[in-house]
Image (tube, rainbow, N blue to C red; front, side, top):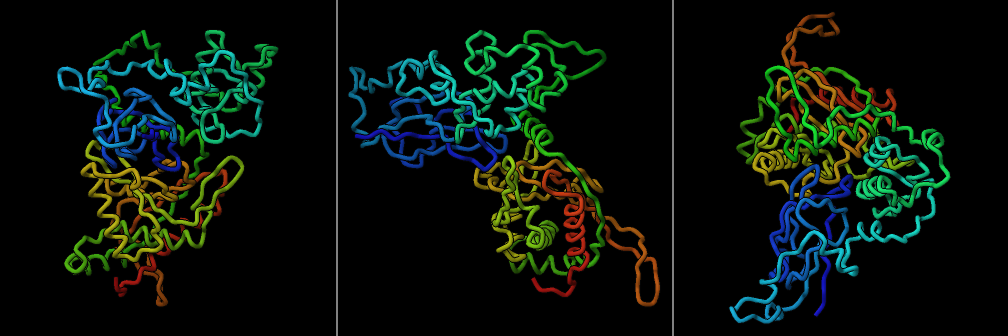
Length: 457
């Protein structure tokens, strides 16, 4: 009889941890292959984690609401037939069913099953690892270090439990807690307060938060209503702040005459739906134009890892979609460059329907390389979108409005009523310069303006 480790699955390129929402199984319960064991949540989507083996749950290593790094063992499954469970007691129930539920310190009582993150921080005589000046630190870790006054020399000595020895959120918070109690190992003993202030990382110039201490309620004057953020809104807020702290945002604007595109869609939409079984909206037409331009300007389809630029060969377009709660989520159309217009339309409509019905899966929102958001859906003419990390660009399209514009013809200028639309693109100025950003955006506008009104889909 063997034991199989159930690990926290990887939910996407930018997701490094997940929160346990609910355990569907307890120690002693039988579980089948692919049967749901627990529910987890990330800053993008909630998901169920299935069993990777058939057998009996031997133990759970984390509790509800624990934040667990990706790849960490969260439970152990004893493989074998159902009859291999513990013998029944006098009342006919398995002995494990009468055992008390696991407490928060269960993992600490058994060193052999202690979670990775706890092993790294609970050993009192552990020696600090050798300083690694070239380590990569996530924006969240840097922000926490800045707020807590942790110098770079201290940060380099903190043992990391993340991928490739990186310092995780849990590591930095544990270090801060240990330092306050005088048990920190990463702090240089000879560093004076003045030296520490000189060595503090550049991102530490962050304004002090205005929230009161957790044990003190703030008072507000006037007639107000206080609404607590739900979990999804908290995660979105954190994601947006981290994006702004990570990428120096620049936004470029242009406008496009999309009259030909509008007229073509009006002409074919009934036949398209009847023939293909799905509606033709503007979104797949926008994505088609974006994909063509990405092939010409591949740098906008990339990400940044330290001092390296990772150019993505796959073109996976994310599209902002509304959830029933009103929050936005970004499902991804994978390999959009390999789909024709019919394929794009079916993908767009399918993902949008799943978002509205809370049926998106983790893989539906993972591995995006470029994002499109349609602010015109809500009546806006234009917007300044925030980059969806770790991408380096996001394009927004505004509402299509009829306006009188000047038309240049071989016979002279004239004024005509045209369908006009503003486009805006926010990009990471670390690697996308203004010339590239503006050129790419103009190329997308030209693709839409030169739409062939006689094309076949």
